[in-house]
Length: 227
Length: 83
Image 1 (cartoon, helix red, strand yellow):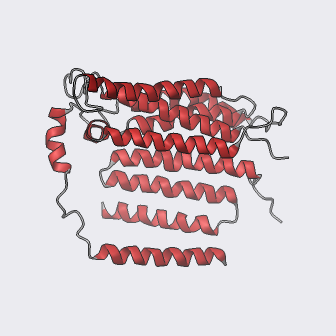
Image 2: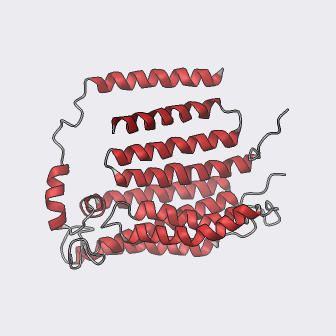
Image 3: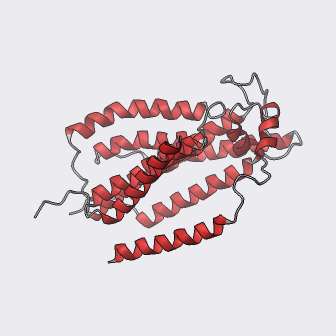
């Protein structure tokens, strides 16, 4: 009965949203996209202009987004609490999951690092690559619940990455520019070493997101086994 | 192109309803991640590969993982025997 009620509720919500959107012009509005697309490659030097927006034009938004993620991870850890030292763990998973974890760990690591390091060239970047890195480190924990990630190492990586992001932003201010202005040589458009300090910023974002989410997932997995 | 969009939307709607109707927690979780995967296909068709990547990594990957861990912690991580 409750499921039917929620379906009805969703139907009503959908009708409401449809009614609101019916009179809205879609795609006809004046958008900033074309203007940014025309100037981003010259001004920032990033081939993927989404990352030019995320890190150069709206870098402070990204910093605040990292702050939101950090707060969420801290609150998650607070709610979950610390597992008792004598608490028992679940038994190791079956052969297929264990073998799959061994196979997927290096694959996810390479894919995640690739996406982080090529964030200024191809779609993707620090957030997406960071999530994949977190899953890479988490899959072994899923296969062998007894082995846990070292929370201290994770928080050190997370803190250093976050500090690096802010430091790169502050370095621009010593030149009298605005906070998080892209630094360094722009290089040749489309090569790996281009777009100035954007790859460094994305590496910091990737490490921070990856460490944070891996810590949160490991915290959740470390919860006491169900009796 | 329109047919691909139509199929993707139908898959999304079908699995979204299936999430509500499945009695197995595991099956509902799998259907939930199918919604996210189909949505990321839709984002690729709409030429938003960055958003598609985020949807696939966060929605289908991390979200399902979080739900799976929550199910395991609540002791619902098993397939019920047929009675």
